[in-house]
Image (cartoon, rainbow, N blue to C red; front, side):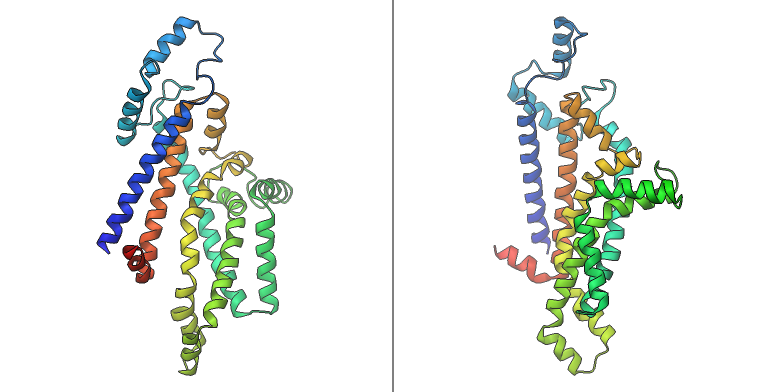
Amino acid sequence: MLRYVLRRFFYMLVTIWLIVTVTFVMMHNLPGDPFENSERMTEQQKTILKQQYGLDKPLWEQYVQYLGDVAKGDLGVSFAFPTRKVTEIIAQGFPNSLELGIWSISLAVIFGLTLGILASLNHGKALDYIAMFTAVLGVSIPSFVLAPLLSYFVGVKLEWLPAGLWYGPEHRILPSIALSFYTLAIVARMMRTSMLDVLHQDYIKTAKSKGLSQFSIVLKHTVRNAILPVVTILGPIFVNIITGTLVVEQVFSIPGLGKHFVQSVYSNDYTMIAGLTIFYSVILIVIMFLTDIVYGIIDPRIRLAKGRG
C-alpha cells in the first residue's frame, strides 16, 4: 500500500509541475500585456511597472522565479489590485465557494445514492420510474437555469427561503439545490446501473440461497461493490461543482471566487488568471490522488493491478 501511495504522490507532483509550466507559457503568449489598455499611464509609468513585476526580465528567468514562488505558495500580486496578493484574494473568496461546494456535493451524494438504490431495488416499478424521471430532469436542467428559477419562485414569490445573499444556514439551501441537481442525477443513474449489475451476480444469488436478509445482502454485498464506480467520479465531480459555482454565485450574490474569474478576464489580470488556474488544478489533482487512495482501500485489486502496471 505504501508503494502505491508514494507512486501516486510522485505522479501528482509531476502533473502539478506540468500544469504550472503550461500555465506560465500560455500566460506569456496571450496578446497584449496587462498595462496595454491603461490609457491614463504614460509609457514611462508602464516601463516602471513592468520592472516592478519582473516582466522586463528574460522569459527563462521569469519562469524560474515563478516556479520558485509557486513552490513556496506565492502566486504573485494581482495586476488589477496591486496592493493585494493573489493568495489573499483566493483566501478571502474560496471558503464561501468551498462551503457551497460541500453543501452541494453532500446533497448530491446522499439523495443520489438513495434514489439509485431505491430505483434498482424497485426495478420496473413506479418508484424506479419516479427516480429516473427525477434524474432526467437533473441532467436536462442546467444550474444556470435552475438557480434563477429557484430564486424567483421559491425566494421571491413564495418567500419560503431567502432569494439571495450569504448569511445563515437558510441562505445555503437554494444555491446548494441549484448546484447539486445535475450531480445528483448523475450519481443516481450510475448507482442504479451499478446496483442492477451487482444484483445479478452469482454471489448475490448465493447469499440469498443461504437465507440472508434483504437488508444484509444490500448493505454488505451489493452497495459496497456497486458504489465503486460512483467513488471514482466523485473527485472530479467535487472540483467541477466548486469551479462551476460562477453563475450560481452571481444569481444568489454569494461572495465567492466566481466574480474574480470574470474580473480577471476583463482586466487582463494575468497573475490572477494563472493563480486561479493553478489553484483549482491543484485541488483537482489532490482530490483525484485521495480518490485513488480511497479506491485502493475499498478494492485492493486496484492498487495491485496498478502496481504491476
